[in-house]
Image (cartoon, rainbow, N blue to C red; front, side):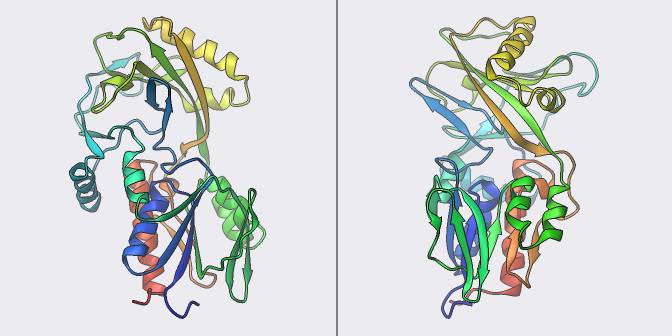
Length: 331
């Protein structure tokens, strides 16, 4: 244990990891976050290129818990989140029958903005893929694909990554916990981002699709604070995505564009595809977060709570509370 402050490494800069890291840092811990992607956000992601941007992961988030309501209010005050009031359609029979009236929020000017805001006060190392961890007498050490074995030693580790990725890291040291993590089914999703020269306005801003390969389509340009060309996002169902998860990107693109055309969608000027192997958990876990005090390792993520953006944030908060209850940071 450090003689001054608890030194914590967080693997994963999605909302769960960032929420956990911020809470631990606010309590006096030293926190370092490692993220394999180019920036924070996880599935609260936005793809950007010349003249366009598109939220291709989480499409919006809702608020049920009072603590998360207060957090979203802070995001709104900081100008990184806003209410999105789309006109929503439901297409096809079965499944969801009517649009619900729940308030939907989005990041501004992109879905990743709240994550970037949280990360701004943390030490975040992007583009670093942690692929191994080892426990030594002086603490935990991490190994990354890009940098090899890191010199820093940590008193505690937080794994804020999808269950299958956590299982790979845990298996050599904690096989039982790895097995439990690996038992959590994660569902995939193929996503297309479409660009147009002119607005496509079919009479709705987003739609739940209850037939065919698609499950959600939305005019990303209808969200508050967006700039650039007209953009629509198409997300395939988990079942269809799983059946086509290893298909060539061009084949998937053609099939999903065909389904979009059947809904009256025009041919786009440009298309970008993204394959989410771990889009969401197949079923909610009974645990909001996992903390193993004997080895000072914790797990958090939306897969432990229910799959929503709110669940990710609450899971990170819950894990931070567990860490601090067992090993409080020193002032």
